[in-house]
Length: 309
Image 1 (cartoon, rainbow, N blue to C red):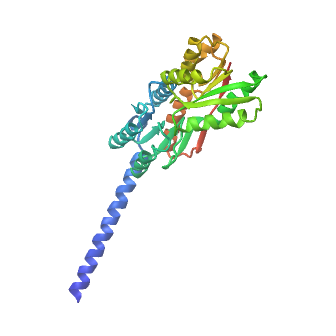
Image 2: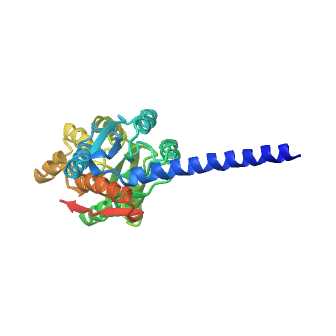
Image 3: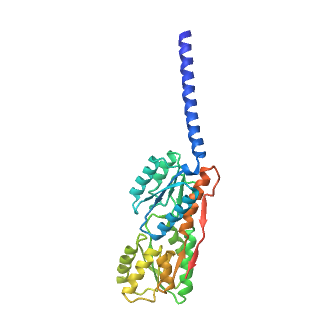
């Protein structure tokens, strides 16, 4: 009996020792991450595509902030492929990054990758586009709904006699496309003399914006304006319109990229909703550093918008 009790006592002591060891190990890992020097911090940034000038500017803003803070920033390009983006983030997790910034290609598909980061105790911030699942400490973006409203209000103001509008949508499933369209329709659908006669996705891509617009013009030639969810599609649509000699059609984009602002100044585009991608990138890195230092941050950090016309 005494032997049996002694054996049980030893087993209990061993179990307590294992639990204590685990607890110390977890505490050490946490303390180690919070106590890291800035130059030892590694941040991963997953971008939906670097084939879009907007996201190139966002990346440059993040790189600038990382350089100033003397932290390591690894940037990966998903090339608008959700599966690749998930694999990219898994690679960042394996590389042992301390923080992940993600600009989702697809707001729903990115959930599994964010959950993987959550399971690895790596905090996540979404930039420009939100995620539908997983735990995110903050979302940094312009108010896309407000931007869509801004575009709609501008077109109502310009089209006093009414007319038909074409809407070019972004990547289906992306929060930016959904929210910009939502804001636009909250305004434009109230105008009794204005009608959206065609609405089609062109995936935020200039070449697709051109081809989709060409196809629409074959059946809808009586149009007064085009609202594109980003400037790349707007510039593609503009090319299609110019090829048909339709220079009086108002084209409104979103992002205020360099090419779009130039087109506005030249009178080719009517307007573009200006975001500040560099500021989004900068804020993402500085916010990540605040989180790693144990500071509280807002769940949504908005970046101002303005209409360039």
